[in-house]
Image (tube, rainbow, N blue to C red; front, side, top):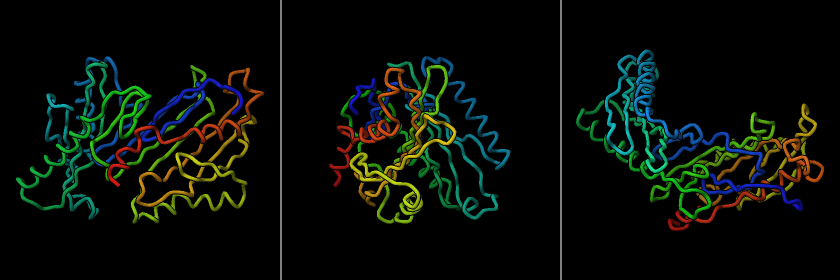
Length: 325
């Protein structure tokens, strides 16, 4: 792009993207082997009553679950550990579905403290599901083992402002996560929105990233099947995003004459290759969001192409992948 538009680099997962200054991270959901977190809503700063409020909120959720699955209850609470932890037992023993009725289900919830930031992060552990029946001592031991593994991972979320060269995943431009190993699974979806400072605009970019194993061909075909239909009706441009080849489709927003809608679909995803995950991108750029002096100089199509080409594996983002090859 020939015109020097004011921009900022953003870090997400293993990647970085450069966006116009009028865009901000609106949401960011991450799913890992042991926990999930919605980073934008998860961080609370300078909130002295958060521990009590968090406990009250989880107890309210457990009470709701108990009305649907009688017998559900809070079975463990530790407000001294790092992170803080609450554990719910969801009694699905009388659930009519075989899949739920045949398992013990536990839902862990964590509250991670960042004292130097006066900040807290709400993290949800992945459900612990164990086959019924089994002796109570064996059940307790296995639940504790899995919960301890989750707590170790949550404790490894750290504060690192971007740019940095840390291994693992950026959760946003401030928080980073690396468990010290290659995650068995990871997927995340990030949305940036345009803003006037007081309200969101039509501009939006959503990126979904999912690592696929070698036996997940059907998942890949299902997620990318829309590309066959798009190729029938729309011309495309080949664009490399994060080292992965794909096709960019753009169209006019029928209700917004200055808006350009777009989708990018990959053709270079490789099953079992963490360096070539499934990446799906869609959104819209409204040139009215540009500063007045740039509106006649930059087209929506040009800005979309420039943004996509800015997406790259960040320095350090692939280090754990390469070390485990």
